[in-house]
Length: 509
Picture 1 (cartoon, rainbow, N blue to C red):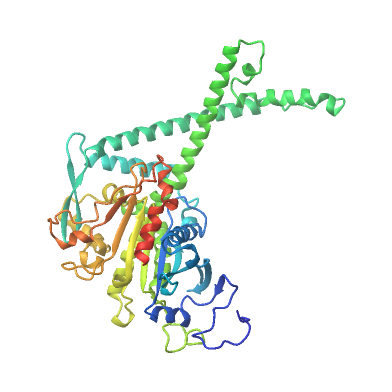
Picture 2: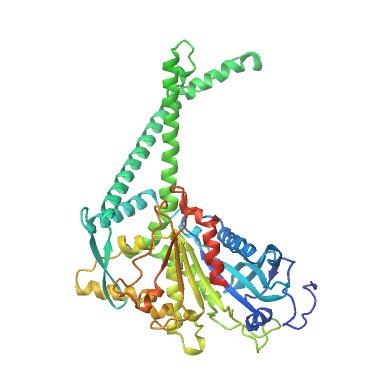
């Protein structure tokens, strides 16, 4: 690679400055435009939105890249897959990083048939909610959601709720088990709150007993001679924090009594660990959901939600090529080369709460493409190859957190809210022609029955479609991931299971 400090040669042939695997420069340049113009090459952008509680920057980029690469190695062989690279650009005065992966499809003789390049971007929003949602906020959100769900479901018969989409209020079924599931969830939540409260009170009492005692004084004499006695006094001083410990180490007590005291102490430690974990989960994970979803009914977290949505939109605008100002022509952007990304295909990916952000972001980009002037349009609908959601709570948000319209004024509000979601306004936003769909936006949803957060997405399609209607091909493709099979942990197992890589690879090629 040439010295980055030397004058640039032909922009079309000049490698991007940087090391062998790290590149610096604009998001799009003449080299990438050559790839986009080559019929034997395809360049695809993947934008991933991480889920709740996922706090490490670039982790989701890495996970998606590894998932795609694993599948590519199986399909085309490891020798045809290049080592991943990374690129760093500056857009709108913000640094934007991406991973770049590439592989070639060859024939039996080894001749290259087609080359695929994939650029993976991330909408990283975790710091926005950090420390902003309290334990009380989250509990209020959960009980409000549970009550709303219980109120509109029925314990012994199927029931429906109305949601405005595809041009009319649609009757959507509520399963018979929904009521009992919500009641069980509510009772479990009450139990957890009781455990957390009990543990907190007991720990406070134990702490008071400890600080009420005088600090143990180190006895005089030699250090080593008196060290054992001093340690014994320390153990005695903190003994209130370990109920029953004096019995456990008292050899004069019956063995059965000592074992009973040990079991009680272990149960106490387990309760402390469980209380700490549940409280952390409620704040760090469910709290993210509360901050993003609550604005549908509560304005307290409006700013947080708008900030998260702006992060998603800012990255998506770069990916789709919406620029606030065109870049000046230079060696990297000659006048005859577009200065905005021109990805042939774009794929939106979202895990957990990130699936809600991915859904909102794609809707926002489709809307933006409709309202800008014709020269500024970026063919969002035509270029978007797929929307991949996994571990998604989208159906739960549609059911639990909508305003139940009961009069004309509310239905006007529902129509306005639906207008911001073109994916449920008309199937034409998912394909080229709803009556004879050839090119379509594939919405793939991976879920597992062992994942309490996810579910099949049935509240984003028209329930009134009749058999034989070509729009049936445009419905959400719900797929159960058979390897997401560990209760609760299933919510994060998708990342390392082959089904995710298979679907992403399919959409890319």
